Length: 476
Image (cartoon, rainbow, N blue to C red; front, side, top):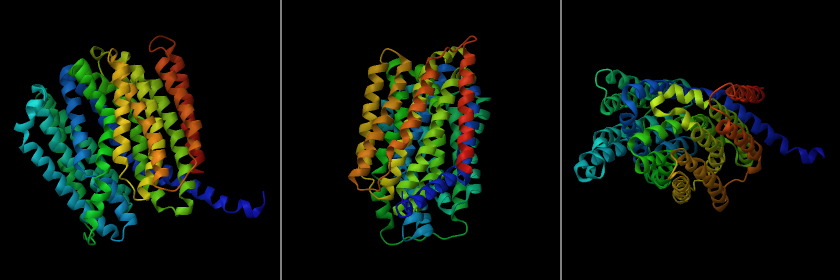
């Protein structure tokens, strides 16, 4: 190969390597700031399950699912838009601050209307879930304010503030809820604590983001943000329901107690997706900031490394799931029976990287409208698969999670081409995906008790070594 032909490719490879270092290096501050309090939150779950029992915890599981769905729907897509506004729009950071305020006020107003009109719709909800659902709606509005604030902190590149806010939001509420449970062992007591914690975090987030600068918007900023953000709502709701809809489906097919059991398996199995989503806090801005002619190379390099990381972590979670499930729930929840569900869900986290990569390019192109069609259709495919596989077996409901993300990966790949976004080499994800499939299959099929579990530990150790080696390669 001549020097002339090699020249343009070398800067692109260098840009990709630097981008991976940015996402997994400095960007790991955002990742740790997002993941650490969530893991600390998970550490509270074993106490909650033991204090409440299967049926009462099922009510909490349904309420938390409602909270996240309401948060996605009521946010108007602003958390996604605020980051793009601060980096790519003419009004910049001042305009992003204005969107933070306006978007948060609109969300609070929407959730207030939903709560006030509860007498009109709460007969549709089971009696034991009515109080928890109302608390979930209140908590969702407060959590949107936190999400909007975190979106602006990413633009400002203030990882310390981001970590502090994440700790306040994700850990404060569960600790308050746990404290109230010691006085009143009911789902509502725990959810009141969650809501109070989110209220404190929302106040902290607004102070962090509005201090040191004034909001200012250009004419038409809000309309433009809504045009970009509103189509994201069905996309975000459907995205969350890739997991949450399975809880509702379990309630419909098997009752409230079963919904709590499958929610625990989904919680463990989807935990690697928490890490990839946390990496997104630094991944998206790096892709947006890359020059257009380098964006494809940057995305290919970063997506390959993130997918490899997701494969190792997902495989590790699947392999260690017998111990993780027994840590989260007492024997009356039947935790070992849910190990295959954890492994199936974990593989979906590997598939999610392909979806995320294409979505970055779609957002960078400012063409998000069709996501409001592609993502709900993908969810419909996933729910159909879950129903067909799981109507006689609770564990097989988890098939819906990877089915949704596989369909999403294909759908967003088509959409990226349709909107003429920057191309990239998607085959870079083939090897990480096969690796993730092999590790997760081992996690789902290997014995869950006896001396044979030593094989699980050995393979999990290999996955851990692979994770450390990947981190060392990227950072060097």
